[in-house]
Amino acid sequence: LVGAGELDKLTSNQSQTLANTIYKALSTRATSAVVSLDALNDHNIEPFVLALHNAAYRFDTYKSKKSDATLESITLHSTRADELSSRLDYLHAVHKGQSLAKDVGNQPANVCHPEYMAEQALQLAQQYPDLLKATVLDEAAMRDLGMNALLAVSLGSEREARLVILEYTGKPDQSKPVVLVGKGVTFDTGGISIKPASGMDEMKFDMCGAASVLGTMQALCEAKLALNVVGTMVCAENMPSGRATRPGDIVTTLSGQTVEILNTDAEGRLVLCDALTYIKRFDPDTVIDIATLTGACVVALGKVLAGLFSPDEELASELLQGGQLSHDRVWRMPVIEDYQELLDSPIADMGNIGGPYGGAITAACFLQRFTKEYRWAHLDIAGVAWHSGTNKGSTGRPVPLLMQFLRTRAGA
Ligand code: BES
Ligand code: MN
Ligand code: ZN
Image 1 (cartoon, rainbow, N blue to C red):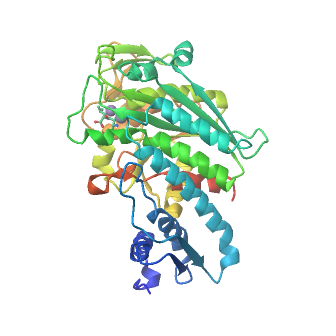
Image 2 (cartoon, rainbow, N blue to C red):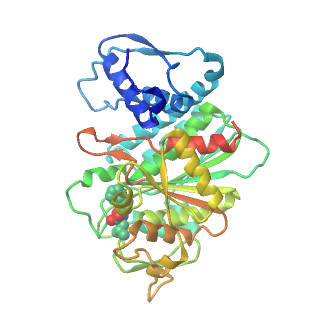
Image 3 (cartoon, protein in one colour):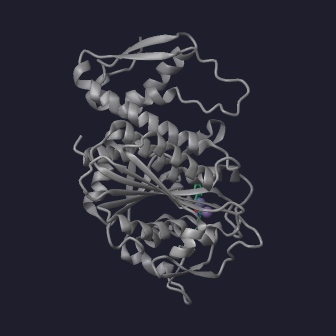
């Protein structure tokens, strides 16, 4: 028996807390349980069920002593079981993808390097041979193409960069794909513009955008949504060394535009800009990039909401709505012309930083310069991709949001 207060006033947030409380109460006291969904309002059912699934998540690969949970299964009960069953299947798919995103996100950077990311994608494609195809570009291939901004980030690392492409065909009719582009910086030291020591361990999570793309691709295969999606992971390690990029270095991006790299710690936009040019070859209907891009976004929105940047009203409202429905929420931030001049460079087409103010916005404005030929949105997940402190760990966000967006697009 769970006291939930006035059910009409129960928010999605509280329904998630409720799910966690229920899991905690049962996990070491029972082996199986039945949870009735009948008391919940319809809009709370999905956040509640997903939270209940996620409550059981553990990352104990490196713990000698594994969890002492006894709970093996939870049966969901509803008097509307028939009508709910396809929604519950969908949530199971989301949970599976979100857990993969967490697993990859939680791996330390001595294990999870660009090649490891590529390996995860190849394995996933092997798991779903009818739905998913994986392609991996190595540094030589990227050099031939002219992806010099991406390669500049990777220069200081002993690990080679990888551009990973996963093509999901859920609607084999040539319809234009949604393209997802995830930042996959497997460790961000800042490079020569090196970060302070305190908290730097958390920069192993700087590949969580890419991990969320991987997780979304798995969730898509499980939910079998009827649309086409290309997921790309842009993977590199940002390290200082004698070969590393220096502040002031100038590179020519794949788009032909030149960038003066004023701060090697603003590397996310450098790897993303070349990927955002590369993916034009898929003739995208819509492009969404997902990146732990700026500390400034964490200052602005904290660790509750991700930043949503898009010049496209319709796309922005689709994502805002997807956030509400999945309870994996975003808040709209501006990308407007007025900020562009902050990126001016006296010597190249642009610098890679926009000064001390509005850092999340100038980062988005930088990306916008590479996304003129398609409908585009940028999600800055720096605040929401992981928990810090004793609770340290990947959240697997925004897999629920991306899936809800795609689910609505697929008309499911
Ligand atoms: N990966 C970081 C952003 C970040 C910082 C995410 C802290 C989460 C927590 C990104 O590559 C970065 O270093 N951004 C710089 C940009 C600056 C140099 C313009 C930042 O936010 O300080
Ligand atoms: Mn950085
Ligand atoms: Zn970074």
